[in-house]
Image (cartoon, rainbow, N blue to C red):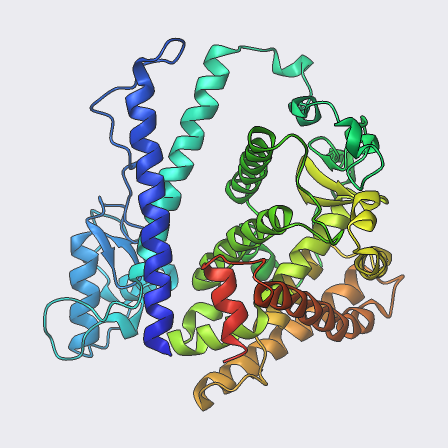
Length: 474
């Protein structure tokens, strides 16, 4: 089973990287097209990476992440020779290129803190590591390539259509204009003329970011553990992920426009069509991969063995995705639509017409409860860790002890935070904890629906999302 999982990850990673390289080479070839600025042929498609330990130039992926040759060799020798270091100062020595050899203790601690893996070093002293990270490396390189292309595209737009940013709000193209007129023989069908009205069912402008005055500064009473977790979760919904999700939505919508005379959102059974389901699965897969990448570097979680990490993720992935989705609804504060990502939403009216009325009630009720609790980023970070660090998962005894200790720290930190920062809501902590079983039930229901559609042949993708979906049923 482990071999099959690794092979599947390898295939996914290779396909993702090939796609990214193909698109990058295509953009290089199009550099001489009319209206497109020519790219510098000597430009390196991969931005130069600096070693996260000492700041020297990296030489590749070593034991879990990109490092320089010096830190790679130092880490390998330390682990293989079982060296024990001590610090003559306060265990906080600066580590950079010029003085990385002065304190091996602090250097080794920094290696571990940034994510180098002890288990990746071979114990037999042979060349090469025990590389369980190959698929992640390829996906990481692919993501960097894609992020670079997106930055280049943004630069091109800025240079070709200069605008006064102060006078132009967040303007997105009205995708509904791309749809052709509704065929007369479909006027009474599920995709009737109401679909094309200005309040489109699939709206590219259905969400406005909250006013900046609504954002409150963190209280000085925030416990240190909560501050740490909030900072650790700050990249979980970063701009890179939002850009990739928005781009995916727009790409799929353009496919629908170019391949059919009307949006293929429903099938003959008036059920959610394969096309829209494919889009939702792609969005979930992108979010899931980003989530795994975050968890791999996250505090606490990164200290576990790979097998333990996999078991925790296989148990918690759907809850984390649902939690992430619900929090997005809270931020948007829309009563009649679901927000997929900033700038893109689906109306409740459309969801009802494709036979998913029950889902509206479930999601609305859950979102309403979370909104009533006034859940904030600190609460969200703690809940993420409580979901991820599930002590009841069958892991090694050593990991179980660690997880129980970590969850106790997180739970006590959340309780202290809610008492000190929400003293008017004395029962907020208890209500947040009571929401966890409800979150799990909702995640299981989403899994079952997706698995049923997979068995019906409507979901045929072979990606990380499907890998996780099958992992709990094998």
